[in-house]
Amino acid sequence: MERDRVSKTRACAECKAKKLRCCASREAPATCHRCYEHGIECTVPDKRPRKRPSRLHTRMATLEDMVGSLVDRLPGPSPHASPREVGSFARSSNALHDPLTSGLLSMPHAEMLCRQYRQMTEKHFPCVLVPRGMGVRGLQYERPVLFQAILVVASWQDKPRQGSLESFFLGDLSARFFVKGERSLDLLQGLLVYLAWYHFNVAESGQYHAYRLASLCVTMIVDLGINQKPPRATHESTVNCQLGLEHGTSENPEYWSYEARRTLIGVYIQSSLCSIMCRKPSPLPYSSYMEQCARSLQEDSEVDSDKSLLYFIQVVRIINDVYHVFVIGDADRDTPMGDGQVQMAVRALKDQLGTWRASLPQQLSHHIQLHTWGDLAGAYAHEIGLHGHVRHAPISTTRVSIMFDCLAHVEAFMDRATRISREDMQTWTAFDWRQLTYTTMLASKISVAIDAATTDQASTERIARLHGSLDVVSTRTQELLAMTNTPPDQGHYFQNLLQQWKGIRSWYQAVLQNRSAHHEAGGMVADDPIVSGDLPGGPAALQSLDSWPDDNFGILPISAGDLMMLESLDYPHSRVDS
Image (cartoon, rainbow, N blue to C red; front, side, top):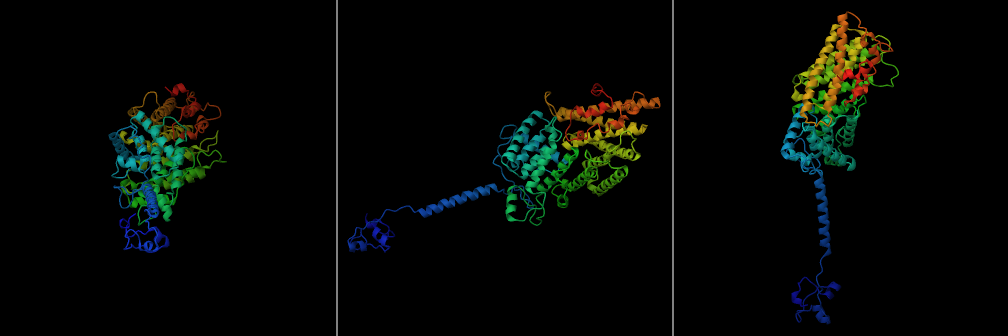
């Protein structure tokens, strides 16, 4: 190799081995000075690729890929997020595998369903709101599970399509939660929305289906830790950020984001009401932090509905107090409460309810849902009048008075329910429908019990008014059922409610006929099983007090077993089904 073709920075093999300076010889330009003097062949080795820069490049590329993957997993602020709340939700790898991409519905249809959901949740369950400015695309990428749940509940007017959407949603939900072990606010909100309006998707099911769904929501609440104040540790905060549980503000680190706080309140409300209807203790007990979250939303509200959440928590807490004071449905209780104890407890609960009503601000003084829940709490607090009676003994005046007060709360509830428009009623939550059935069944049991103690024209008129109210809601429910486009071979929740109410209404008609005959005869009617008490074992009303299982006040409509009470009154099925 010629020396002049080699870079001056390159040394020959001999100089390089001895670590000496390699300088070209003047006598022989192709040979270095040292090799020329010593008569050594001067060769310049071929250039080899440098390994160190290559290794550095590989390591840097690896680190860049790793950081990039971590950044992709961390949620970033969305364009619609406010400075007070960074809308950081983890993007799922399955975000694009949804009903839209699967061809179950079109983009215009999805936009229409999302608009309808906004109206549903603002009116009846303002605990899971779609952020302002977020459209279908934003829901697809940032709230994939919530997006699917919204499509399911909002498509109630198309039962066949709703069934397909529900199957897709439940499959994706199961894969995320049970297979992949995913825990996120998006997953929790989707399940909570499905629970709130799950009656659109069931025709007849186990009594405790909703209770199990609520328990699953509570499990996620605890796993995510949003039932407690946010952690301060950097590592935990980073993990929670990945789950979509960003802090509300940097100035106030005591609370999670607006959405997380609303979700906590929603899970408490739904789990409590499902538990009460199933006669079970709530899986998520009340805590002062819940009320603090509600107060923080009231004082610094994003939307008007934030100001009402505090009062929902308070009335649900009263309902929970009723359960714990009376332990209703506890078959293991050794001795029932005496009349004096019952009266004192009812008065205390009544005072609590009165204080709650008085605390409602002026802007919520006409809030229909809050007042109907207050009526429900009042009826539930007075239900104890039905329990703990001694058979073959007359009902005490204390118990009769409590039951009359219970009927007054039921009347108030039914009056408000019948004044609600069909447009508002059609998007009621599952609990709204169950409390309607609960109050109707409760009134029927109390009416039979009171009839054993006293029969007068006022009680007959009360029964007639309740019958008329039930007629109104039955007509509306029939209209709503027609709007669902349910195929003839498929069942629907509304069909079960109508059948159940038909039995109760038939029973009312029988009671009215017997009472009319009683008043016209001016005394006892021999063939009236209610008045004559000709059923074995004592007065018919007392005999039937415990024959209608309290489980029938459960969250789901049940089968013909609901009519067990009618059988005990000697009314055959043929008469009920007419």
